[in-house]
Image (cartoon, rainbow, N blue to C red; front, top):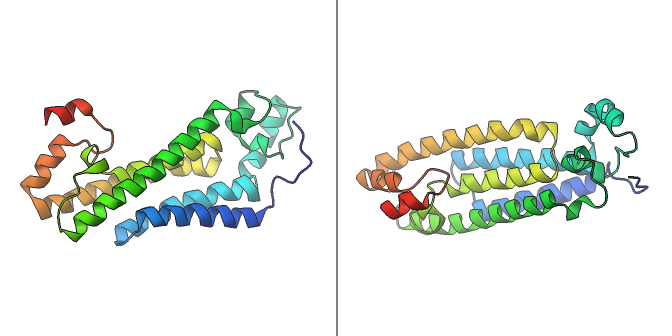
Length: 215
């Protein structure tokens, strides 16, 4: 697996891709409150950390270079293909972009951004009416925007896992869970029984068709 083209030190690509994905997420999420900005900033940090390793400096490859070189002596660790660690660790050859994991990762990322967009559209109109958001994605889960962020991050991890992002993922997931609980307390104070009835009929993160039909 040899490649003469430079795979790293491409800081222009780091900046471009980071800006692109952060701006894309911003256009769908549109943070307004302090809580919104906190969750969006955490997601942005994940994206920047990812692209720094994807195109800037391969910290994970560097830290694992001894073990990787001993196990895969014929692999050019500084090639772009080697950065797709799941591809490298399973001993695959060829273009990793055609692999199943890469395709699944794109599905997760695309689904996450679609969910962000659909959820924001419902939430925006609900806030203008001073009502609860209960239609669209909110008819299936109570926090579709946080689910979207997790899907996008999971998609990136399937495509290009790094030590920083692997460590950040569970921390950010726990943070989103805590933020969702705080939001639910505020919603219950604002909407009372209407919120409690909605919460009983709608799962927090994972859709349940059986529970929805029963409600």
